[in-house]
Image 1 (spheres, rainbow over the protein chains, first blue to last red):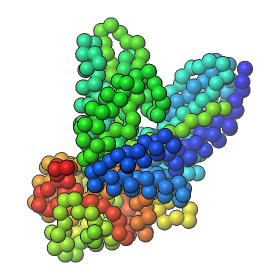
Image 2: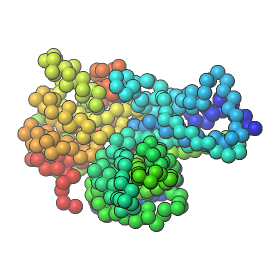
Image 3: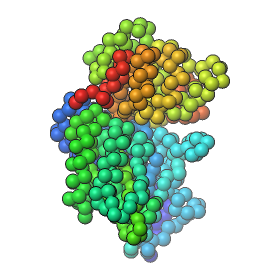
Length: 278
Length: 177
């Protein structure tokens, strides 16, 4: 049995959420640099140059990369042999949200969370959206995404007819990106969730965004879809050009004989993500 | 690079602007996003006096992150303009002369901007840290209770943008690449 104290989790989350908002992961920055070298369209190339300058300014001046410091999405992988010592907290959700709150305050992140109908700001930048994945042994890993909503707003789920197959899935992805156009701050990252149930496919599509830069099972198919998306010529900022997507990842789960749920989660170029283990 | 100052004193200055022009904007501008727009439109519907002067004004679709200690402003990049399309229409007759945000807008807005001689500037999405360097002063004007969604007045110097919609009905996103 491994015991983990709530204070430790709070401290690590607070630290990580600030870090990801000031500094993008190396693989994300490399993808943007690559796009800058490849892109030929005048306005788009200039935008990519400003993006790289922005990344530099944010890191050096310790200021959020984007004013939309996002809704915090948390994936918790928790091993069967892990025990959380809650201290004064009732559950792990409370502990995680305390970490988000502390980090947001310390890092001057925007309080972007409101009640959905009355639109009253919670002023703590919480709650985050937390997903628990039960794992083996004494693993305790937290992955955090600060998810901007310009791109979240153009994400979609569709229940396809099983006979539509791979072709239908591709069409739905292309259609979603095309409809999104300039709105999600392209060049984008795309997470695709295929299978499971209605909600499972959506969670898979978000989880797929944690796999950016990794070599996964569907690499060949992903590359084919990436090419098709880039052929749309939406380009950085929607200004036109060759680079619309920086990476695309697919995650799958078995589904029902009658169904084929597909979710496409779009993320702006500022993919703020990080993880830690205790 | 063309330079322009807001609030707009002379309409000739926006007559010179064409889609695709890279511009540097200076002067006093307002921020407003979804919630502030909704409130302004409600005030107009009730035929009450607007809490801000829109004559010659530029509205920047932005909600800044908090200002860190010792700094002038937090991160302050544009939000998606299209969400404000419908809510922009009632503001036009109050002399609004420019809007700024990110991404494309509806054809209806392009046509109305031609009719009312209003310009739409595109600025760089996600680049709030970079853009904060051109903001020299920030203060809340109204709707303070909305936090980041309040209406702020910014004093900016050489803030970079591209003309997205000009007063001749041209749309940057529909140009030939």
